[in-house]
Length: 212
Length: 212
Image 1 (tube, chains in turn blue, green):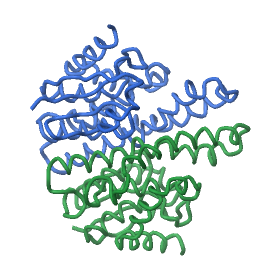
Image 2 (tube, rainbow over the protein chains, first blue to last red; image 1 turned 90 degrees about the vertical axis):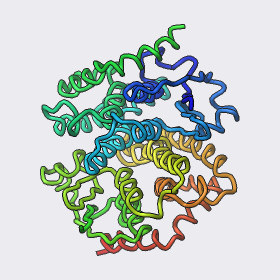
Image 3 (cartoon, helix red, strand yellow; image 1 turned 180 degrees about the horizontal axis):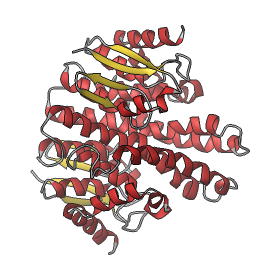
Image 4 (cartoon, helix red, strand yellow; image 1 turned 120 degrees about the vertical axis):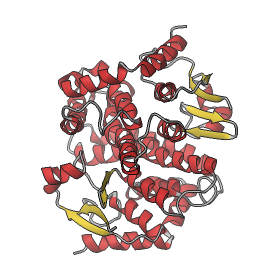
């Protein structure tokens, strides 16, 4: 059955790969599954046809026959569960890889998303300048602990997994801010993720949409 | 094997059930698995013994024999995967229930956590008063869409699942703010969750710790 995902017709990042369809493209490339993309305009995302597929009017979504999924974490997990290459066979190692997926999305990403709030959503407010360093410090606290855990390992827990795919994707959002470079261990980790051929294919595919 | 989870010796909410161990207790109660609790002080959470179990120095964690997990989402999923009662048997319905878990943690909870930032972490800053309604409006936007999707259904997708457990747990954080009451559909949904005997047992267990 054909896999169809959604992505923005024009991503707010202009093709830097930070929109969440890149994570799903990357997972599909890692496991060698072809997919099609349905582009959604920023207007159409809040209209009923798309809301039926994604209750929060976001991207990406995933359709395969009768199955309709939303949330990049759920989609990457679904792909990882059904195809070899993104989750270890050992049950305990698999559970730990899944834990890193959740850690990326619910512990590391939320403080990073605050950069969008302080810089863009509230960028014209009088407090933006004074708030930025507070937001940055909360991010640094998480990065410091993540960096300490990673140490000199290549990946978070043994071989590359869906947990790394998600963590690298989340950390990539920091590149424009310069914060990632304060943690060379993490900068090198992200670079290892970007060096994977599957990531390069995913990045090129989303860039092709945004460069049109 | 004995299941051991961690919780705070003194939860910042004083036993309102908003700390993340409640979610894990609830899941374990739903599937009928006994568990023990190791209490962690607010000081010890950032020290090496706990950091070895939870890289970000948070709770809850989950230990069962050699398996050590962190992240409430990962732990609830692990419990749901190994014991009947929290995930549907049908593969597509199961994938959708997992999608709601991710939606709760990465789409609905992050804007809700901003209430803590604006009220507590930055509560003494001059912008706190003016920022609060902006934070509230971003939460309302997500609640409006969630409420529309839930409609007059009891649960998000068929029978009660780990997706509902997580979504109700996330929404409960809003009760002190009054925002939940603006959406009667969601207030009733949360009340249905709280009315489950397993939730009541989980709530009582965490309260007993905090009431000491």
